[in-house]
Each structure stands twice: as structure tokens, then as C-alpha cells.
Image (tube, rainbow, N blue to C red; front, side, top):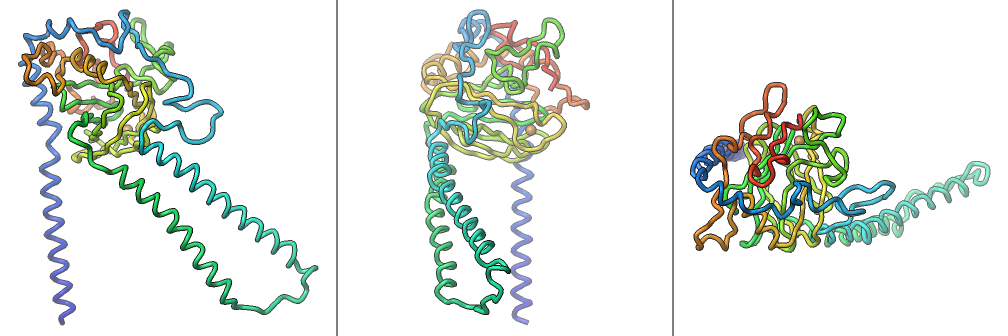
Length: 378
Ligand SMILES: [Cu+2]
């Protein structure tokens, strides 16, 4: 009787919790729409300041509109014929890489070799012809203690650095972190910098020359490797903590950047968060890492890590603000040339999955030839 009563209470508590979870979820879900409304309001507010922002050149582009930083050899992307993990450029990445190379791999190798040797000894020494009368021994206390205690010690030895790494990976971002919001959609990423004014843009994969119509932008070697290059790169400062927030508009995607040791699911109606600090300037390539539909393989991620001063310049060129700008009268209020730049990432891509032309790209100011390109077809 008492047990049934207890069960009822536990069950009721479970239901109540599920109810609370459901409510929270329902409140989170409409967020993308709120963001769009905001974007529209700010787009209208920004109408008269377009010219001011247009004067600022994008520091990541050459005067001819091509990308200044091109992929460097052996870092930030897969390299032909190389085995193992990519070179890591974040502290947690370096820690994880060392853990993998100096603790896990030696232990795994030693255990595999040890078991192989035991197996060979058994096969050779105790084969039927060499050992016609098998031993009837069924217990040996010493061996049983050893084969229980040794694996426990090995696991404890692995657990310490493993849990420490886990804790470092999920450390909350400090106050001075730069926030990057990555929004996954079928099949492209869009980005927002909520702490830096109203910067929003969409990042599409660049197609090869023979796949685009005349006049459309195709991938060049300066953009990056095939299937990994995008039209609009994410720009982030080196040496400053980054607060990555992910979400999605349709299905689950995953924002993954191997060189940063980051893989964070982007789930509709939810916000996931992780922090990292990039130690090295350069160009880094990643991909969506959650099977998200037919063109899952064609939504790459490109991060351009630049010195902080250049990041600030880029933010202002995009019409955003740096936290230090807030008190000064800003010349760089959101540059959104009217309806052209309203971000449509919250609206579903057409039924065929074709994205409308890239009119929502913020950078209508710096280089029309680069940013008003038609959709890359993702
Ligand atoms: Cu995806």
C-alpha cells in the first residue's frame, strides 16, 4: 500500500515536471519570429544611416572584393594523406588533442598488443597437439584480483583528465565574450552577432565554376577547398572568448569546427551554448555534422579568425557596434538598406528547398559584385 502511494507521488511529480518542460519549450519556440520582427524594425530604423556605413571598407576583403585571407596549408582544413586530428587552435582543443595522443592512444595500443600476445601464446602453446591433456584449473584468486583491479585503475587514470576536459569544454563564457549565434536551416547557415548591433547574414556554399550561370560567383582557390568554401565567412577575433549559441529553423543541424574542438547541435526551438577562444589567426573550415536532409553535405562553415582590431573594423563595416562604441555617438548604426536586407532566415526556404537570392546579405555596402550574387542553390 505504501509503495503504491509512493509510486503515485513519483509519477505525479514526473508528470508535473514534464508539464513544466513543455511550457518552457513552448515559450522558447517562437523566438526566431521575434528576431525577425526585431530585424525588420531595426532595418527600418537604419534606413537613413546607410551612407555612413557604406564608407567603411570591409577589412577582410581586398579592394577588388576578393578575400584577403586564403586557406593556409595544413591548418583549418583536412589535408590529403594526413592521418589523425586536425591541428587544434583552442585551449580545449589542444587539451583534448594531447589527451587523445598522449593518454588514450598509448593505453589503447598497449592493451591491444597485450591481448594479442596472450592470444598468440594460447594459440601456440596450448594447441591440441602440443598440449593433449588440458588443465582442469577453474579458479586462480590472484589472477582474478589482478584482472579486476588493473582495469579499474586504468579507467580511474583515464577518468581524471577526461572529466577535467569535459568541465573545461562546458565552462560558461566570461562577460567579455563575443557572442556568435549560428542558425541552421535546410541547407545553409545564417549568423547573428547579438552583442554587436544588428549584424545578420547568410552563409551559402560556393559552387564550382561549371555549376553556376554566367555572372554568378563561383568558388576560387582563395575562397577555400571545394565543398568547404562559402560566400560569407564568419569573422571572429583571436584571443577573445567566443560564446557560440546554436539553434535551427527546421530540423536538427550541428555546427562543427574540427580545429576548434567544437561540435554543437543546432536544435529548433532551443539554444545550445559553448565557449571557445581561438589562439591563432587563420581560416578554418567545418561542416554541418547532423544528417539534416538531402543537401546536408553542402552546408559548410567557414570562420576567419582575425586580430581584435580588425574584428572591430569588420563589425563597423557591417553596420554593427562594438561594446566600446555604446557611449560615443555612433556613425555605424545598423546599415540595412531598407527592405532589401531584411533577414529572411526565419522563413522556410521554398518548397523545393531553394533559397531565394541572397538579398538578405548585410554587406550590400562594401562590394556589390561580391554580395549581391544570386543564391548558390543550397
Ligand atoms: Cu545541417
